[in-house]
Image (cartoon, rainbow, N blue to C red; front, side):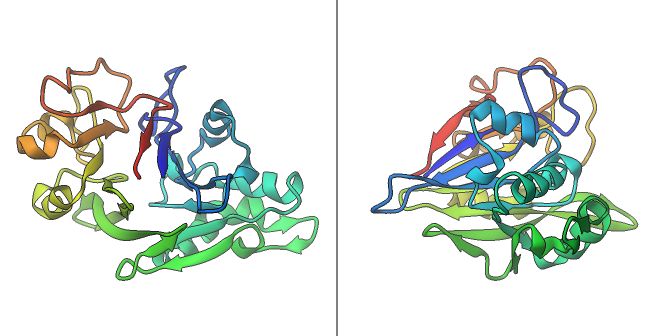
Length: 259
């Protein structure tokens, strides 16, 4: 199983050599020479970042959506219409927590996707919709994924959750935070259990409070930092993460063999 970062940038990344933090997970089943691919989040940059890796919309068996910000769902309309009109109606499985599906359609996709040459459509006209429960997680290509609610935006008026992934690979497990505040008390059991951690990380002078900032992450125990890769960063000069005990910053296009 291989995880490739189509981009490692933040929501507003405009670096010419980077894109938003969406990932391609590949798995090859015994007896097959072709990998199945799951796109983890599909942001506004996806049509460019995926082409940069050599992929087309119909190259994906599945898409996982962690939450409803545009750097995570902004490319879904493109993917849906390209598969519908160009690639003979190819439908990928759409994995998303139940609570995300109605607002995803009603508030993000319906305006561009409901009316087509066949009349009125729904989300299931374009994707094989799989409603997820965080209590159960889901299985894909022989791998089980725990779906972990993590706090992303916390205000006095409410909390926006993102749904992190904990993948149980055959040889090693991994924790992918998606978008999360710095919350070591809540995340420490997952940090400790994982063999490798992919942690969203802010850079720069401003602490937004909606992502973990490098200055916060550097305070984590040494054994946790030693298995942690940092991604979802802005185009500021990067600190020497290796010297500070981390595995490093993920580079655009970098792949990881997860077993």
